[in-house]
Image 1 (cartoon, helix red, strand yellow):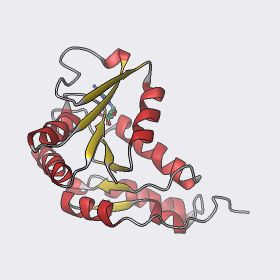
Image 2 (cartoon, rainbow, N blue to C red):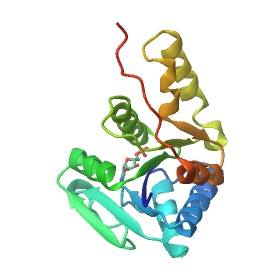
Image 3 (cartoon, helix red, strand yellow):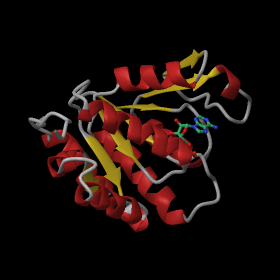
Image 4 (cartoon, rainbow, N blue to C red):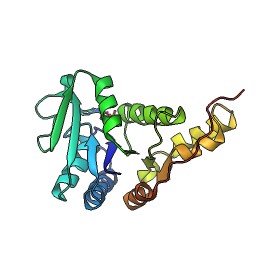
Length: 190
Ligand code: AMP
């Protein structure tokens, strides 16, 4: 595994704990030789992870759509920065380039990105690792919702293996390093 896409918040006004974990993840990624694939922005946790990867001697691959390619939004530290026409092309490139996916806390953008890689894995388009880094228990309510999905049979319980939940950046890296792609059941309930 060489490149990891990190999906995470673009907000600068969240609790410091989120920034500390993002910083730690960047450091561990660089130390483990993982390239960072990310949204290319300076803002929020995105900016923090990227600065930490670079500060620790790692590589970053930013992908930003034309509309967000603005001064004060886009980073100038990346080893490679690709500017795409729109958000769809950008996501496709990030997914393709990455060997695994990590979701740090975030808002609608992060949820959309994580749900897309989960859905594609469920349908067998890829079998790459997906991790929720559950800083400050941010994802607890979403994980409860996932249990509700299984209980109500909107998805098979065996799909819990689609994703891993980490409480620390160190556990995230361990999971990525030791990941064995699972055999997944087909999606259909009939
Ligand atoms: P959100 O969770 O709504 O803050 O959105 C963050 C996610 O959407 C990131 O993982 C990015 O890929 C993308 N994104 C949102 N805003 C920006 C931005 N200003 N610059 C780059 N990417 C962004």
